[in-house]
Length: 469
Image (cartoon, rainbow, N blue to C red; front, side):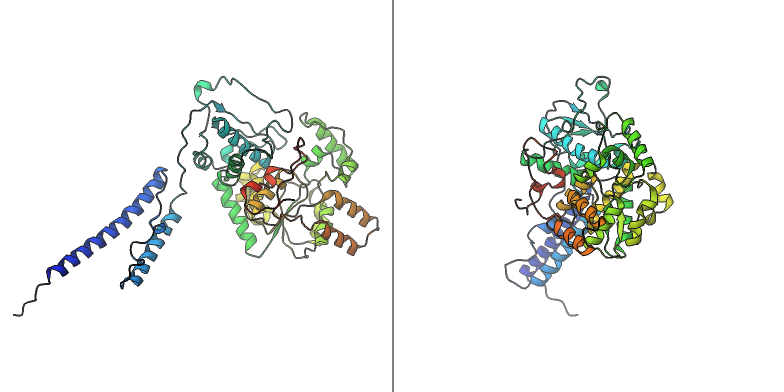
């Protein structure tokens, strides 16, 4: 019987070594994957991915292992990428500091006014080394929305994503619940806001971090928002028209251009019914000519046509109930028949939980607005400004900042037949050159915070590519 010759000792040692090496590599990959899963589940910082390290399987050492090294590296990268997709986002390391007390916040206004206030107050808590309690939201304003913070925003994400900056708790400890040693009620425009300018860069960047990362909407809102955007994208591009022609805005601002005498009286009664709306006697036409009123749906229609939007443009209307109902949208629908509302994208069952929750409805509009190809607000309220800033942060996505003061002059000239349509259209286009969210720095006006550019409309500190005005 023939006998196999024994392998030389050197070859046997090399074979055993290669086997051990292969076992170590395989074990390392398995161990690393398990560690990634475990750290994610426990909320610990995730270790660097193996794929991010220089490969030990190849490199500049010569030999014949180049192709095998590349294949092994590709497998490792693919595995690491798959783990990264499956695992939840990394939770930052908790900042440990001696707290100087608790900060309780009660936000008022609509979604975006409250959103900006939350960003500011997180920054205050960080600066003063305070422990922040999850904010309370306004339930007594015109909207009477009963939503709590957790109905609109993802509370867990809010708390966890900021724990390297501020400790945030869900409620005040029981021993302090009956005694709040100091309470400050805002009495003017600036009391509850940080300055637009002059803050340290790290605080300005924290405001952005809160706004664009920590304040994610609740999962139910995010899911419906994605569904709406997907439905809109299936048939091509779309613009969002933030048509702020709602009863509360018109009553508050005193803007009644185009309203009947009966409607004007109704809006005036409403303005006097809310004691915290300070301005009562308002000259509507004077305010309109100063550019301080939202454009009417009819005026907006003329502007869209003059800017060159084609008749088949798909326009999503981001707003609550238009004052005056559907008849006020007749001209807009005639010129632009592809008008889209929430009710056309979602079923009645999907929208039912959001009824009588105007802030949650506004959150859906917000998600669609930041995802649109073009965003056009008919006024410069909080949503217009905050959405514009978010779109700048995302890469200077186009927002057309309408110059309402000049526009109403041009519209009046057109309606008085002192301008032809071609002259009107040319003037509107020229007027808005350079008003499309190009990279710029905010205009600062010392001592006049209401006149200067709003931080959340143009957070230029949080972007790199900007230029001076």
